[in-house]
Length: 292
Image 1: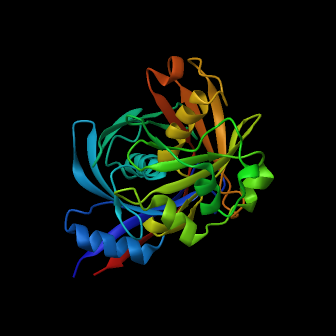
Image 2: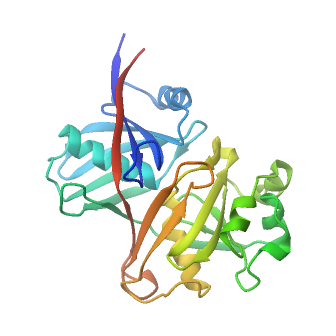
């Protein structure tokens, strides 16, 4: 029999029971990947992470699972796990920087100063893929071609987890989106791996967003940090936000499903040439032990 301690935190929020919930298992060394996947299915959150201590220098190995699949990289698990690492003393409690080694590679994290600091990740390399027919993208989320922004062609963009980005007219249109499974599967059929559909509207503060990933076991994700760096890159490419170095904006996500999340973006260098950072706050919610 083994006992596995874990913490639950809400990420990209200052308010408990909002943001995106994450379970972090403090020590997953006794588990194989298949068991980690079964535990993630049991937890039934967007993601569950397993820390593999001890830390080597300033780096910690982490594995990330949705209820249906292991991910190479994910945003709210990176930020939430960094919070737990500091809180549990797995890294120094006052550490301002830590590296999480995820399947995609090392992901640098830095922490602001203060008692309630924002935690930031540096988005891995962002790659633009193929463009997508507008009627196919809109149909996948139950919208009409007329709902989309005509000057922003839907496109596949990835920092590890491919997403089709669809820009629409306003937040009300975003809120009307609902996955049509048959149309969604036609859209992603040509992809070699599960693909998310990220719907957003440009707003004065940045973007109002929703993300759907049924093939990953996530009907809708309250906050998708791994897609927010690519969102920034897509918006800059399509003239929907300034591409100047130092640009900051917020993507509001999860509001429609009652889990309002605020994902902060900091563009470093023109068009993010020096990186795109995604940050947010974290709230401690619960702790427990799984016995196997």
